[in-house]
Amino acid sequence: MRRQFTNAPGDVVSEALEGFAAAWPRHVRLHDDPAYVTRADPARDKVAVVSGGGSGHEPLHVGFVGTGMLDAAVPGAVFASPTAVQIRAASRAVDTGRGVLHVVKNYTGDVLNFRIAGELLADEGVDSEFVLVEDDLATDTGDGEGPGRRGTAAVVAVEKVCGAAAERGADLAELAALGRRVAAQSRTLSVALAAGAHPGQSQPSFELPGDEVEFGVGIHGERARERRAFGPTSELVPQMVSPLVEALGLGRGERVIAIVNGLGATHDLELYGVFREVERVLGRAGIDIARTLVGSYVTSLDMAGCSVTLVRADDEVLELWDAPAATPALTW
Amino acid sequence: MAEQLSPSHVQRWVDGFVDTVVEKSDYLTDLDRRSGDGDFGTNMVTALRRSREAMAGAEATAAGTLFQIMSETFLTHSGGTSGPLFGMWFRDFGKVGADAGGFTLAMLDEATRKGWTTVTRLGSASVGDRTMVDAIAPASDALTAAVGAGSGLEEGLRAAASAAREGAEETSELVGRRGRTSYVGASALGIPDPGAVTIALFYRAAQEAVGA
Image (cartoon, rainbow over all chains, first blue to last red; front, side, top):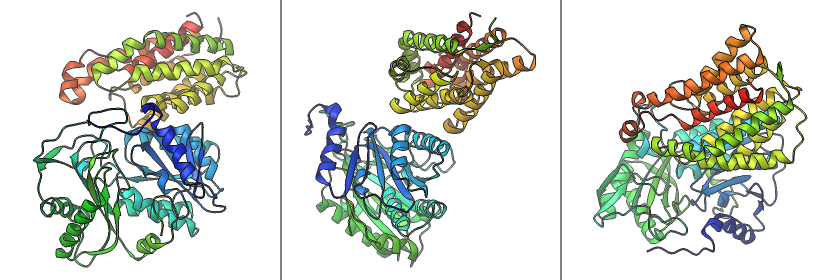
């Protein structure tokens, strides 16, 4: 039996957005009809970076609106894409005349609506580019068939790096190339210990026996293709990290950004335990963890579980990662 | 015989289309349920009802005005993937008719071809994939042939409507061949694609609007 703090379940997204905007008045502004979030203090002369997607992944994406990351974020309903008109409105609002970079996670609805928004904007003379984030190794069929790898926690790295580069004056084409490079060098695997429940629902979206984990989940409460035996962190984490190293072809001495991300109902106490194992696995492989992010950033409602993301990093990416950011969810 | 669709013809076309789809929404939803693709009928009806509200307060000065309103409404209110694709489909009719006092057969041919390209580009669907494209493609070919043969408006629309209907009906044979998930493949044989059926209704409404 799950319970959530809500009024009417259908109002959960709009009420959360109102609360979010009220809680972060120095950082963000909420716009209504259609709904989107922009910086409270808009940038004057730079390429605008805009992202969005279904709600239920908080703090993604609205939590990353602010200096050094996003200029606007466009939230859809729970686990549903925003509409093209929402995306167009947000993009128009933040375009300074230098164009708009759309950072899009690979889901059919998100991709379609962002592409449509790009065409609508082009008709109005607003330039936009599209960076697809497709890091989820669990859905890598390797044959180019089907929708391909889903977009998950690597989106935080793409938003951070592109946001910093935009702040430094990169043009739209440079930003798109940079975003695609970071996205191409990122892979993620996620494991769930328990499914989440939609707002207003008392049952989780699936049941999992106590001796198994769902291996390779996405961020929409769905089951994975595979169940594996539950076990101690020291046994589970290598199963997540080794395939990432292999998929990226990481060799000894290479540097990565490592992201250990909670899926919504997993405590930092556990996430740091997971990171400790990530460090051990990568240490044995001679891979240098140049930067780290541990916490719940790209969630799947109240799913219990975590993801591990590795991003191959070079000097440029690390410098942009280190650049200042001041957003509700990420500040340094 | 009208050689172009005036704004009042377009009004009849759009009204007829909206009424028919709303009337058939249970059928379309059932098709969708049985072919395993989600909630097509209810999404369409919501977007069409909102379109009707938006069109009620608008003055249709050009042939394309009502399609522009339908497009904007679909892109504003419909989730999923088929709603936005229909929004972009209507948009090409709105564009072609933007500054015109009426739609000639050649303009309907142009709008259909452009819409076909748009839906194919954005939806990554080709002929034979069991989508709305399977009704659009034969309608487009029929219109192009009619324009080439110098057919009249009524004759051309009758050919387009008939070709779209046949294309939609033939989608019921595409399921097994495409080898989608096996449980859908087995149970959906004989069931046409609701998106293709909706396109067929779109051309039938156009044909009826000129009394053909």
